[in-house]
Length: 574
Ligand SMILES: Nc1ncnc2c1ncn2[C@@H]1O[C@H](COP(=O)(O)OP(=O)(O)O)[C@@H](O)[C@H]1O
Ligand SMILES: C=C(OP(=O)(O)O)C(=O)O
Ligand SMILES: [K+]
Ligand SMILES: [Mg+2]
Image (cartoon, rainbow, N blue to C red; front, side, top):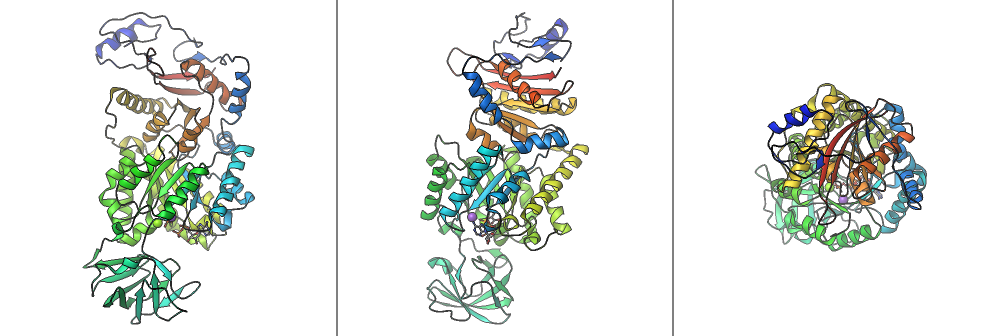
């Protein structure tokens, strides 16, 4: 252990702790002995914890490139929010908006970006690839020309048994006691009381007496006869068939598990994935993941690309294999729409809390999705119950909240987004005041020593940052690992994650409390990185004298002779 200090007592007191970590120093380990070293670098000490920050020395043509990149450093929305609300007032919970016909013009997309949309979601169930391509192009333009930082996610269609044809353009009502035929055969004309399912094997394993539930409870039927593959059913609970309404079968109060017969990644999904990759999307969300295999398969396919794979938890099977799915993926979506078709409603709140907890433990970002402000698809105000649901997801420390139809087809998408924004800021403040962060336990993640050191550094850094009341945490990251380990601890101050990898920047957009910035970073000069980035934020007038920044750095060796460097430093801006 080495210590940079003007005070030999501090150095000697550290000897009592005999573990050889490399906290705050190049990792030359000496046990039980104080070895004085001369520190280089460009940071001058000025009393305890007080330093003078000098601009990094920039050389020749590099300067131009660096300046250009710096301009992309902080996105316009974070900058504005920081000016308006200060470091501690910044929203930490990330916001995802589904883009649909109601919000796909450049003007609408810009309003959503200004309103705090961090990730735009494109649901490949709907519309054409050309339409999606056009939206991606508009978002890229907003990012490049107007300084936004909006990531793009595509969401696969996946395979699910649903209504293909119900004989009407919109909804059809089923009255209690009426008898209906469910078939996979193509319908000729619009025969009454007949529903076409999308999958030939939809009735396999289904028995007379089973219950057929539409859209998780919109309407219910009892199977009264099986004719070949067709099912004749009697309506036991009246309701509506909507386009693409979902089927689930129940026996003795339990779901008859059947989705596993369908492939998670269909031919169309692979074509959509190829499309997404060629368009450079940042996230691919996989629908109806039942185990870790399709996630691994897709990750292998994406090998060496920065595209992140999110698994949607929306089936009974995915709950049974939750941990292996979380482990294999880069993040999770709690897709409550379909999940509510597969498990009884009353289980959704506890299942959501469990999933967010597991994701947090395993350090994977989690999105809580579907029906957050459902009534706003029609009305300009949410129900109070919806606001309470949103706040609960924030209280559980989900990384992100998602709008679906509220933004895709509703006329009040921007307002819905502003409600998510306000409700999350409010609950984050309350959680901080109640000191709820400290209640959360975490399991150890890392196996190798460097991973364990990184994890410990981030855990300690956040505890220190909260106790000291620092204004911001700065971290330098290649793949986003250190930034996400800090985020996992849900610190009070925002985490400014500096990276020279744009893929990492866009992926970090989904992580709680992280403001990702694209900058040119040195591979071996930590002090230069620190002074350049502090200067970058200070030049914008966002850091002022007296502000305290905690700097966490982790430099992995790039060649054999160099050493790892991991440190926590607390700097007061002068
Ligand atoms: N790209 C799109 N084009 C047309 N309509 C869309 C699009 N994306 C979403 N929608 C509409 O918004 C609704 C809500 O979106 P989402 O929750 O993603 O889909 P779903 O309800 O099919 O699961 C959809 O039912 C659909 O009517
Ligand atoms: C987000 C979900 O998936 P999709 O909208 O694709 O059905 C869901 O089911 O909640
Ligand atoms: K989908
Ligand atoms: Mg779904």
